[in-house]
Image 1 (cartoon, rainbow, N blue to C red):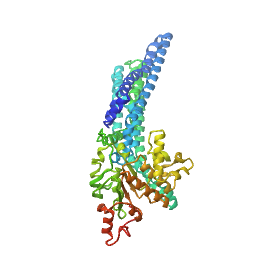
Image 2: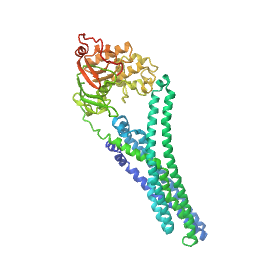
Image 3: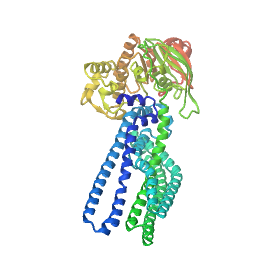
Image 4: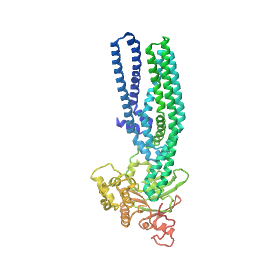
Length: 581
């Protein structure tokens, strides 16, 4: 059954995932039918007590009726509990089917763009809550309101007319509530996403904020965002509270009116005394789902919005296909007219970038700050997808590779080292799920190649030392060495290193240079954004990037001769070279 669920999930549509839960939904509807029929038991009991027991004085009849009522209520409670367990089981199955795709979409650029300002995981949880909470119960119980109204007509047409009028009034209130809350809830969700994103961003830079004396100002900025969220929440909450109160008032008035009307009809001998209580109970039961809908409208609307967002998000994953397994690459890198736009799409970060790297090449990338070096390196590593053109490895576009498989052949060191919460060994192995001596040996081999082995052994628990997000617990130089070891893990054929020596001391830089030489000897193509111009003496090709374009690319000595006419192969100065890309 798990395999079938996974097959359905590969379509990346929420509708297909819900289709996989149709058995749960079917049983919920079936149990709801029996449950709502059993809700008639108290009304029938009261009707029989007043019309038969009190009139005849039959004590044994009362006992039998009470036994039947207790059995009916016990069955009702069992079905109600089973229905809730089914809804929870359905939510768990949805989570099992969809969460891998939702989490992948949250990491992908396409998924984030499809979600807009919403947090994909929070939207998914909102949908699960709506499918297993009051909105779901209201949805399956609401169709039974006409049944109860029909029974009211059987007691007396006036009772039925009152129930019909009351139900219509509650439906109108629910529709007005929906129109009033739709915009308020959307504003609340947008404000919530902005506030939490701001708080997380500021928290990740808490150390710098404390050192720069910015904490109070950041708190004030977050308070403004929280004030906007609070106001949006209050607007939505006040609207829902007003309509919930109006619904409750209308239901109580209508229920009392049914009791009064029943008494009036009983005095006229149109219905029996038992019909008075029965009509009140039936009207109350007919109005209950409608009142629940209004009360749970906030969750219902959040679930509806989440459904739309997740549909767009999962649709963005439909382009993922079953990739043909390509042979292991040798490391021939080529860029063909690669263009990358800014997130806002208002400018080009990289324009028509074209070059080719061969196995064994060590390509140094130079240029002023903001020239597009980091953007180029991200495209080389596959960290970001270009908006135009293609990045190829061994002639195959990177988009023709299954991302996780291609990642095994690429070593990427970003400008921000981007270590993850876990052990040092787990970070180096890229959280490889394999266990045993092979993985451990590969971890140690990569650490030795990066010159980090001795440094790691000096940590409190060596390779098993726990570190926090962004390498918290390590110095900048230690974190960079661990990240370099991660890039070298598994003997990749392509290295993309963004300022790999920015935090290294002399020993660390020596280890880095030796690692690059060893990689070049193995036929690895390396692309390095250089932080120190002295590093250029160890590359065999140079690339100059300015204003998002590759101005020059070729053998090191040729490019240096163009930059510094009359100067030998060792660079003296590089125009516009900044300390950061």
